[in-house]
Length: 150
Image: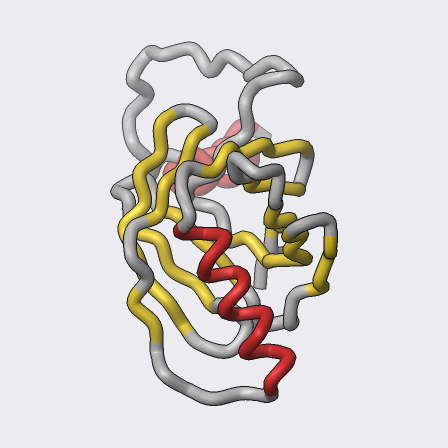
């Protein structure tokens, strides 16, 4: 019986032992109210509210800001990239570099409005569960949700 137990446990031990060595650090769970990240997340743009008028985003509108300051996504028709500066809950986007495809007029109008909203100044970021809201100094806001994996 001892041989049978050893025959089962040895392969499991070897299979589980292929990871990195334990650093000795204790994994402390984060509090429920811990700040959620804005960077390193694929966000889907849901809507844009400018001057009290809300427009729903085309399904292709996306945004990602990486920890190294690279931002990229889709404005609704065209792909874009930019530099982003993140300080706490404040984000500032540099000039956007975009592709130059033409789409339906309503998508192009949304795209121009989103590009303006991203680049008119510093935005305040608020993450609540799976939602991100970027708000400018005038109260205009971009509403985003965390993209589902896959």
